Each structure stands twice: as C-alpha cells, then as structure tokens.
Image (cartoon, rainbow, N blue to C red; front, side):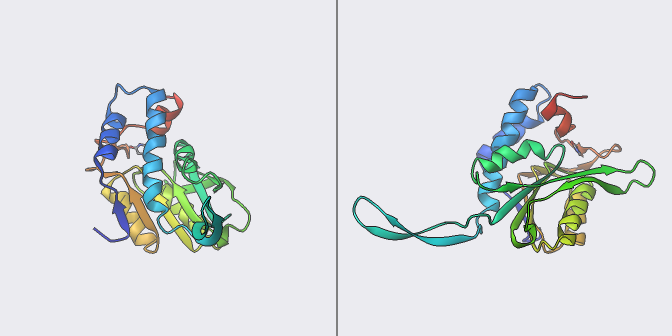
Length: 210
Ligand code: URA
C-alpha cells in the first residue's frame, strides 16, 4: 500500500475494532471505544506535530525541552459521525482548535454537498486533521479536504477508523498529498454504500438514532 496510507496495527486497536464490529455493543460502549481508538490513532497522526524549545527548570537544573507549539493544530470532524472522534483527539492535544464541516449526499446527483462549514481563524497556517470514522466511498472526506484546500490549508491529514479500498483509492487519486491514518481496512462496500463487514452506521450507533 501507498506510504501515505498508514494502517496502525496494534493488538489493542484490533481488540477495540472487534468490539466496534459487534452488533451487541451498545451506544455508550460504542462511543467510548470510538473515542479510545481515536486517541490511539491521534498518537500516530501527531508524530510530526510542530514543536518549539522551552527552558524548563527541574528541581535540580534547567533543561531545554521540546513542547507542542501553541495554536498549531486544528481538528475538523466531518458531521456527524466525525464528532465521535473529537474527544479522543483532544485527550492527547487539549489545545487543538475544532472546526466543523457538514456534508450530505445530494439524492439526485449523488454528489457530496457542503451544508455547514465553521473553521478556526488562520486555519491555512495550521496542521489540520480531518476526522471521519468511516471512509466508505471517500466522497465526504474528499469534499471536506477540497473545502479545506480552498481555504488555503496545505498540511492536511485524514484520520478514519475503518476504510473500504474504494474510499482509500478515491482519497489517493484526489488528494495524493494527504496522509491517511486508519485502524483497519475492510473488504469493500455493499449495495447501500456501507463498509462490509464494517460496523454498520457509525452515526446511528454513536448517537442512538436509526
Ligand atoms: N458510514 C457509516 O456510518 N457506515 C458505513 O459503513 C459507511 C458509511
């Protein structure tokens, strides 16, 4: 696979994926696990977070230590399932700003259409991580990335929990510069555009809707 597609392989992540797949995992636990998986993915995706030197005085002496540069990262969940990943990333980087992009699929043209966009100031200068737990056709993630590029963003990563090969291909073909972080890649899509074997509808399972 392309070096810009990073499938984080760890037994703890795989265990959590099994719990997400399980139809008997109820909303509260599903939510908690999405959050935990997002923290583990963020640990990888933030490896190149901007840092700056800071002088720190220990009880014994002073030392130069690298700390995360303030205001350097924004996370952008794609509504609505991306919201389930936000707290997991903030657990690692509580100072990250949070933008929101809402995208729906036009039932006639099947094109991804933006219906909401609220982004932090100066987002073009920040490292941006798009959150979309299910990379199915890739249409929403690609539309969100295009929107961010149209605002001048140059350093964009995509974090998804589960992907179908079709979604990965779409992002690779449309946005080759964007690194994609995943916990798992599944077999494909069913006729309704769901990832199989998948988790089902992540938004419904996160928010208790049908
Ligand atoms: N969105 C979901 O919530 N689940 C899928 O399988 C695909 C898209």
